[in-house]
Amino acid sequence: MLNDNRTSGVNPEQARVPLAGSSQDPTLSRDDNLDDATVVRSTRVVWCVALMLLAFGVWAYLFEIDEVSTGTGKVIPTSREQVIQSLEGGIVAELNVAEGDIVKQGEILAKLDPTKTESNFGESAAKYRASLASVARLQAEVNGTALTFPQELKAYPALMAAETDLYQTRRKGLEESQAGVRASLGLVRSELEITENLARVGAASNVEVLRLKRQKSELELKLTQSRSEYMVRAGEELAKANSDVQTLSSVLKGRSDSVTRLTLRSPVRGIVKDIEVTTIGGIIPPMAA
Image (cartoon, rainbow, N blue to C red; front, side, top):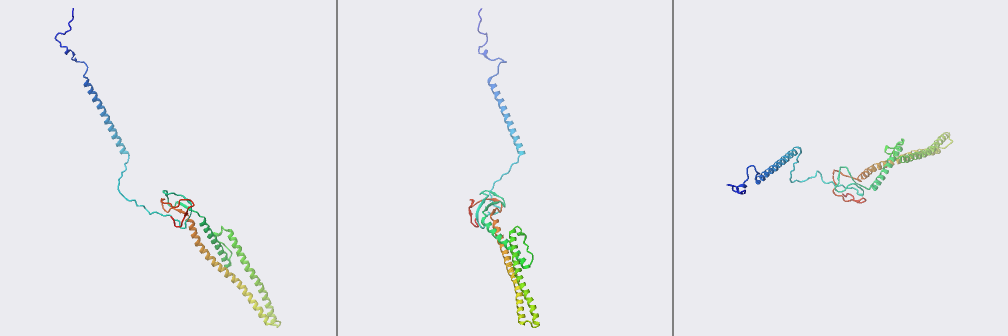
């Protein structure tokens, strides 16, 4: 029996039409996948924007923002530039700052070599102390009182010892010279008394009596003059010593101020601008900045 390949009443092209319940169209499947991916990306973008807004809100709440404005203006310093100068000048011994350094008021900027200035100050101080000790000694001689020295000389026992020895020597010399005159005067007085008694009975001449009286007067005058000359000389020396003390006191204050000015200090708080001498051992002329 032979089989017939043709199907009665059916077109072969119709046989290829898909039946219900078979697979979907591939084009529709791709469109659905694209829509899903777009939704996912949009959702992520929305969450990212939301998180950024939340973070910005937290930051704005917790932190302060400085407001900055711009404009034109002029800077005016509170004080003018201060020029540091040395009145006497000198040699730079120390330099403690450099240009651009910020210094405080009273801060030491530099020091000058004190050798010459301190030498002059020491010389004046020694003369002042010597004059002061002389005043103390001469006051004791003139007033006839005990020798005492001022408190500021207590630290110089050698000076006080020298003035004490001089005081004792001068007093001893005066007393010895007057002691000799007093002895001669005593003898003349005794001789005059005896001669006057003899003259009353005619055993001695009145001329001899007059001679002894004149000699007695001369010795008394000599005794007074020696004392007066001593006091006058001591008084003149005292006046000169007092004058020296006053003069040297003024000189000492000036030289003490010069020693103080060897240390250059900043008068105000500020910034070091210009330094003309920057070398240790360099010479600063008087009144130089």
